[in-house]
Image (cartoon, rainbow over all chains, first blue to last red; front, side, top):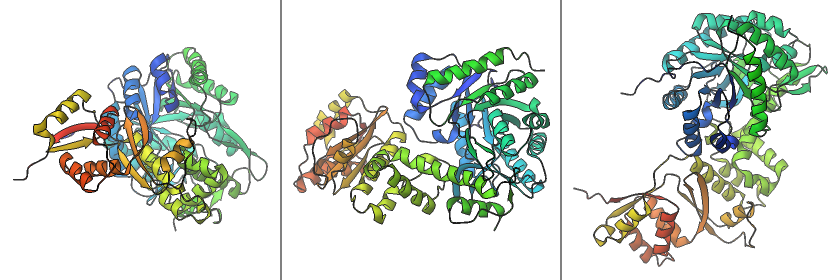
Length: 289
Length: 256
């Protein structure tokens, strides 16, 4: 009989800055052992039998706390969750004993298709019920508290009946899951949907924040020439996002914070400098209120 | 059709209209916002293929590759969130992709690159100690009835084109002149953490093929002799040992 997976017993990520682990940096991380709070990996990249990915993650996990971040579970999907995928997640959790497991408020699969993007949901009672059922299923089968990430979106559904932060609050209330507060996503979505980021934050259950993400965005314009921000994880963190992050920390106290970079990946040194900047803010953030 | 079915279908088909029922607070045309999702999906999947097929991309140029990969993506969206599996049949698509017909070896180069991705992620297996292998192989008592266990990353490819030379010409090593239209046999494996690619002789290919299919060492050697093959047995075994490809030597199971 196989043992049920469970998150590491030191169950929280330390309230420090961490980095997404990039294959480009595997060797340098082991050689230089940078002073970081944790590493985060995309779970799906490690759903392979063997080879360098597991070799390096195994060694890096011996030195650092780990956050396992899923991008493929399609929690908002119309259909049932993919059980094979849940089993693959359980196997990774068993193997690497991460301090945290997180996923997105989005859908990415439909029928047999996987679309490899985080797609938007209609915020209504039907979706709310389905998302809560899926999160209940994830938490009971993985035996852990999921952190749910707020999305970056570019459009909305006309028949949505709930605001996004209200929807998220209700999911967290009903399922007991935590919040992965992506501050860049807050900023991107608020600009794209003409909302006030501070009001958006006010409406979120920030007390449930288990991790924060910071990233850079790309900028485009829509058909009216209005700012259209794209969450591409391909640039340094914007000053406005840093500013919003300071506001968040004043409300949450220090929370584990990931510097997220998935495209146009710079040297490890550049990312460590951003992590140091986050650490500085975390140090002055005081205790959790 | 549910709202997500319509959304998903329109993502993959740029000729389909933007789905109904979408809105945008700026009052902009939802089409211009939907385009972001469409672009994210297509470009992320094309990028996934470009990462796994770098030499194919170099052979046809970036623009051609992205157009070809885009058509593949539209015809074969992923079936799993495990993206390392995506594009396993890209070579089959390329083979029938008419605009690439004037690069006849393109599909086989894709097959060779696919084997490298597979080798990179293949299961781990501890290679047998070289001295131990030599000891077993040099013991006349056991030699005849051995099955040779090869590393799970090891795969072969047979091509009517000089597929290894073409691939190697796009690596950093200096290019040795070659005829792309001469047949070549490839062996791909992962040695510790590095994926290695070799051109091997036809006889070596057939011999290792036999071993992969579980034929005993002695039977594989006999078959090779029967084929009047160019196999250089000692050299081949020495190469397999030095590249840490042998993971066990087990006595052939005698059926009751």
